[in-house]
Length: 107
Image 1 (cartoon, rainbow, N blue to C red):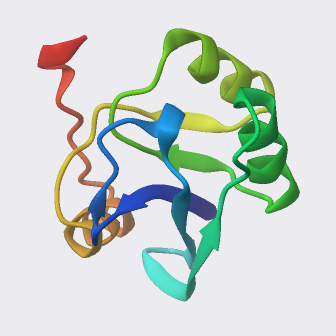
Image 2 (image 1 turned 120 degrees about the vertical axis):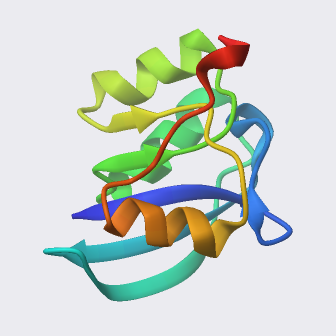
Image 3 (image 1 turned 30 degrees about the horizontal axis):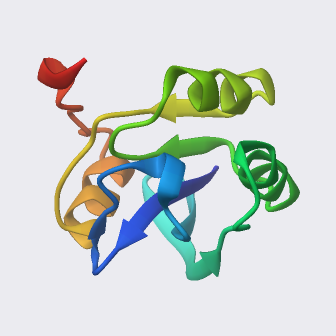
């Protein structure tokens, strides 16, 4: 499974719509196989979605995301886990343990 985590200053980026970096994690059976940083397109929303698809992302973990962009990402078959906040490494570890808890209070 390949997941993308919107990243900013070693934390989950507060708003995916304007995020420029993602942390890519490939994991299998709760074990991380690889991790790398990637830059997102500065183009409008469709550029970001194209980039996620090209990278083979299956799950996007992010902070806030507009409903429009969330719909575009989901339409590509990418599962969106929105409204997550915290230290990037802590969130990645929680994801590998299937323990991510989105902050839905803002939705």
